[in-house]
Image (cartoon, rainbow, N blue to C red; front, side, top):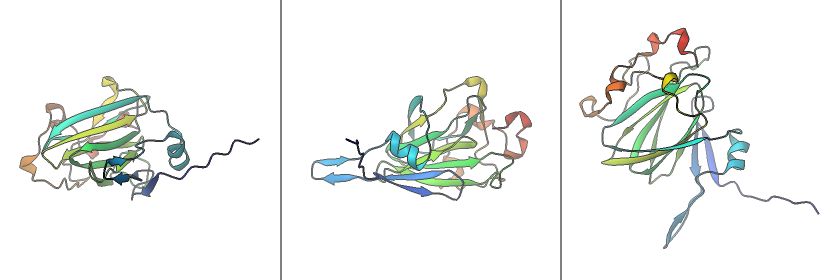
Length: 194
């Protein structure tokens, strides 16, 4: 007897303007008791995006105006990320930093919230950041490589060469000391190749 797998796709996978950066909208089952959805399914993800082995889950809670990013890691610790918001709302941004690609320096910005339950898949070769648009936000994300301080790099969030509209006033943005001193896109050296 053949074991046949019959499974309905449980999410909508939406291609953004950047190659391989994908919005995932889960199928949510709601009733008077609450809701249920699959936040991750390995086989479905592999079929729609590709086979990855996520090795670490991260979570952060931040207040309105906190901007984390734009971060990435160099090989061999370059990371793909699958980002979602549990509570609150953020503007989540991916910037293509692959020098030889046709979309180098371009970005996509997607609103992720506990309400819309969207996720954003960001492959290796992109810098990532987000800003909190509500009183607080809890962000969770999976990565396919471990954190390495030695390989961590970043881009300046307000680099005019990238031109991100963070949807809040510049004076409301709260940065870490580390994120204040990041280079612009034009200052990336060959040693920063992703």
